[in-house]
Each structure stands twice: as C-alpha cells, then as structure tokens.
Image: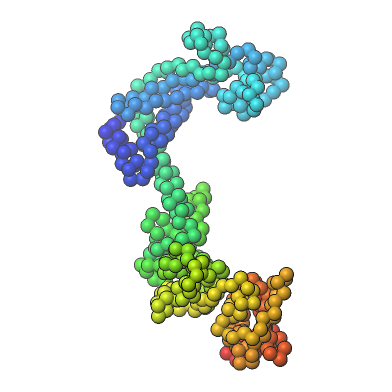
Length: 402
C-alpha cells in the first residue's frame, strides 16, 4: 500500500471536500474488521481493527464482554425464549438498567472469574481485548478494502455536502445554465448539481435555449435513496418576492415589507407593501426612480405586469387599493366573514373587473376577502373569492367586449 499517496489523498479530501481524515480512517477500520471476520472469524465474535497510517499495518483484536451468573440464561430459559435484540447486539442491560439475561457465547462473552485472572479490577459489563493473529495475505485485501471504502465514503460525503449546500439555499434565487430539455421539463446546471424546472413551474409562453442562463427560485430540495432532487420555479409567487428583495434595498433592510402577493404567472401580479419607517414611501421605493426597479423585475419575468399597492390595516382602504387602478366610490365590509361590497361608477367597471375578471380575482387573492363589485345603481357586476373564483354578468360582458 502506498502510504504517502493515501495520506496525501486523505488530506486533499479534507481540504477540498470537507471530509475529516479521521472519519475516513474510522470507516476503513470498520470495513477491515468486517472483512477479517468474514474470512477468518467465527460466529458471534466482535472484531476491531486499528489501522496505522505510519506503517500501513492493521492490528486486529477480539472483544469479549464480561458477564456473571446473574445475567446468563439457564438451560430451561434458553429452551423457552428466543434471542432478543439486546442479546444479538451484545448488550447486557435492560431498558431501565436492570440486568438482562443473555445466552452465553464463548466467542462473545467471558465469565467474570476468568476475566479477573487477566485483569483484577474488571467489572461485569466491561470489555476485554484479545489480540488476533495477523494473516500474511491480508495486506492485499486491506489495500483493496481501503480503496473501496474511500471511494464509497467520498460519494456519500459529497452527496451530504451537496444536500447541505443547497438545503441552505432553499427558498432563494438560483442562477444556472440550461443543460437539456425533456418532456417540457428544463434541466438546469447549478454547478455542483443539476436541478429541474418542471413544466408547471415555468412561466407561460417562455422559451428556453440550451446554454442560456436562467434565474429561478429553488423551492424544494429533497434527499432520496436514489440521490438528491432539486426543484426550481419561475411561476411561484415567492420568486417575485425574492426579486424585489434583490432590487429594492429598503426591502432587504426591512424598512419596506411585502405583506402579501397574488400572482398569475406570465400575465399579472399584485403585491401589497408597507413601510416600517415614517416618511418612506413603500410604493415609490419598489417602483424606483423613473420605474427602474420594477422595470428590471418585469423584464426578468418576460413582461409580466406588476401592480404595487400600499397595504393598510383599515380593510376598506386596503380593499380599495387592491382594486387599483379602478377608483372606488364606497367599500362596505363584513369583517366577521371577510366579505365586502364594492361600489364603483359605470366608467370604472372595466378597470375594477379587469380582462376576464383578472383584476378583481387578484384583488380577492391579495386581500383574502370575498369581493362583490356593484355599480352605483346597485346592480351586481362581479363576485370574487380569495381562491380566485369569479362570477357575475359583468365579467361575462367584459370577456365578450375584449
């Protein structure tokens, strides 16, 4: 075995991949113990290996647990009972510290009397170590085993490292390059791993090209027996929140807060913002000078419209703001059941409802209220709930007119 190369490899792994050298050596020793027992050991033996990095030698020993008559089963007990989990694992104590009886195995146990001849002050439950003979042909086996274990340990550690790295980034924006496309799913290279942008998480109408750089929300990181799965989204409402956090320093610094968001990806979104500091305009902060901040986000979303409205503790004011750009005459609320009747002028009906009922639908999602929009004359125009359902003759009229 090339010890210098092994030592160098372990040090390199520790530096580059964060795998502790001692952990790999411990794993190698466990593997060597198992290999030795398989080739030369006996049933019931506990074998331990100590691998010396300086000499390349492996010292093997057999461990025996010290027992006395009180924890050894009688012949009658053996004939009526089956081996317990504790017995098979070598434990001799019950759940609450009471002695647990075991079948005596000379390869696994040693009586207290015999043990005291070797070590005078030894007690029941302690271990005695007996050296085992080294085998001449074991050097080759040891080298092969060490190599296999190192490779396996590297793979395991790398999986753990990748999972830990991306789990910390869950809920954040990731940058990656389009690698391939399969069944309308986009596979994106994030560096150390490949993530999937499912069809349902894409923005409607967007097209992707291999080699193109894409920003998206890493919304789910899961570890499975087959490996690590990373899922991305560009249609998730949180994607817009993270984009605003990137573009608006006031949000990053907690001066301005995004209270709620409603989104129909690829078409239109509404966000409600609130200022935690007097004198700071939350809407103006998000829009930016000459609209530069919100324009950057709209461009990232392929032209998706974004309405930024001011959040208010007063339901009437908040609901009126949520239906922007329509001008509201009156808001009649029923706070206990979170229902509101919205009164508008005839010329504001189209704006209040929106194309296909989108404006009132998003307003209902944004506020969490059921909205009933009526004209000044009292005619019911449209109703919308926070689930996005819209009903009413006015909505059908609006669809037909557009």
